[in-house]
Image (tube, rainbow, N blue to C red; front, side):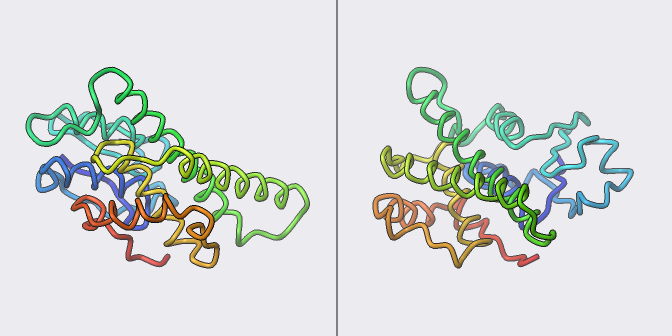
Length: 200
């Protein structure tokens, strides 16, 4: 398998954290990619020109991190990332959804920071900040467990991205339960082994 990736992408991090947790990361060849350039080989596999994009061993291209993570979970061996049934499954999927929502808002906001200020953009930015704050409050009110699944990995990637890209906007002070959870969960191999290092 090969994975088009950018080292600072939190969605790539989620995919690699799942792969590490399942013990299959060595099966994935990493292809450094700048999605902004829309290089022909990349857009031939992913016309959306977004990372991550996984090309399976049979040449099938998969994109969007939830789809890729579920595909990796279908491979033999390793700890399952997606609970198979019942409330555990719906809780994990809900946690993935709220985490991806945090990331959509945070990544989108970052893309707007360098643009000229204007009323419409400022209002949009404020909505993203408010959405992130509400989502963090919801996670504080319903703290994740320490078991490793797609939900908890997604939450850790979202919190890690906020630390990485918005270090001047602390979230821990008013959410001590979530902060304590993250301090412990961040030591799991998939999260500890995928710390973002590229500041660009």
